[in-house]
Length: 112
Length: 117
Image (cartoon, rainbow over all chains, first blue to last red; front, top):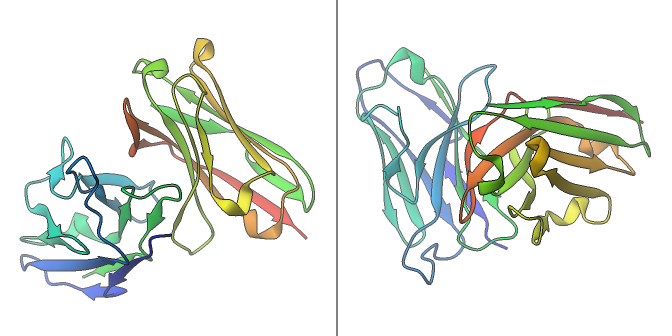
């Protein structure tokens, strides 16, 4: 099974400054169809998770363009270009290239 | 919109059936999944099924105990949970996948399940 490792577990940020979260997989997430099924979710305090980025770098509808996903193979990054107060919460990466099972990272807590 | 119901408190070894009412999209066109989150913990995928129910997938820890099903006529997804254990205590989220497979694109508000030992 694929293991997803996120870092850091906690990320203190400054409003208006950039921030980035790392996610590594135990094996390449490039699918035989050429896609990389790496997804990022945001979970604000007290809310359900919300998908931000799918297939490595595709922003979901309504997601601000300050969020971007990048990476390749086994190393991936979620970047926030300028952190806003509403960005506080937990962030999870997930892979579904090699499933079942689906694998989530342990989460990164973003706090001001 | 995805609205879960059926959560609650149950004794270890007991059963519970979660329901998820879908609206605002053509339910029968999408794969659907359940994902759970134990108190203070991260996300864990539980089960996924194809539009017509021909394919179902489970995490190993629930195989043989949980059953995912759907009723496309009623726009509803279900999770039958038997032989519940304390470690099944979690908020259970219903999620809408993509038309061609799993993608966890939209999430419900969650249904809390507490298994007392």
